[in-house]
Image 1: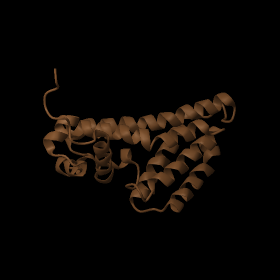
Image 2: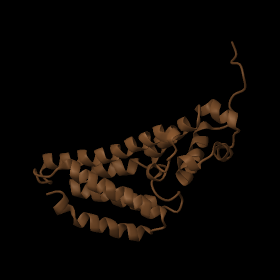
Image 3: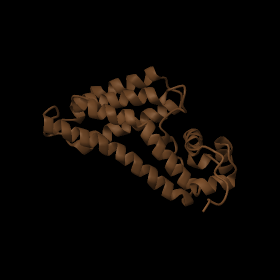
Image 4: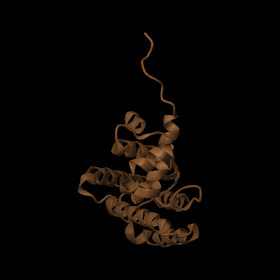
Amino acid sequence: MAERGRPRAFDRDEALHRAMRVFWTCGYEGASVSELAQAMGINKPSLYAAFGCKEELFREAIALYGREEGAPVGEALAAGRTARGAIEMALRVNARSYTNPDNPRGCMVVVSALAGAPENNPVCRFLAENRRESEESFRRRVERGIAEGDVLASADPARVAAFYATVMHGLSIQARDGASAAALEKVVDSAMAAWETVAS
């Protein structure tokens, strides 16, 4: 039996990429459904039919961002020969990514967090969980460093991870405010100069 109805007249993956850029630029609350639909090249009913609602579209866009923009950071953490080197590499990858002229500035997960209305609390919690996952990846890398002997056994992995995750989020805000890649690299230099104290 033939399928009923017309096939979707748009590329879902391309539409999701376009929506991701709108959210990345405007944040969750700042991106209207009308603006999203226009950027995606579809009408509102098609948006709802394909993605359910604005929040579900946003969650898919964040997942896409994680796969595409987050992958190099994960690779840096895995490839670094020491925990210090891996975290430094991850921060520098982000410093370049956050200032890439081909993309909106900053980290989508950080800049989208400006969702203050009570009805958007689920989105705030979702973004907070995403940020915690980034911090957890730092913690796991420090624990690996302790196991491999390049981090002091006395170091507190959670403390180290919290410090460098905070630096990472700060880089995003600085980039959003117009800081250059070179300026962010200097922040990374300062953060890594504190390694011996933070990881003691």
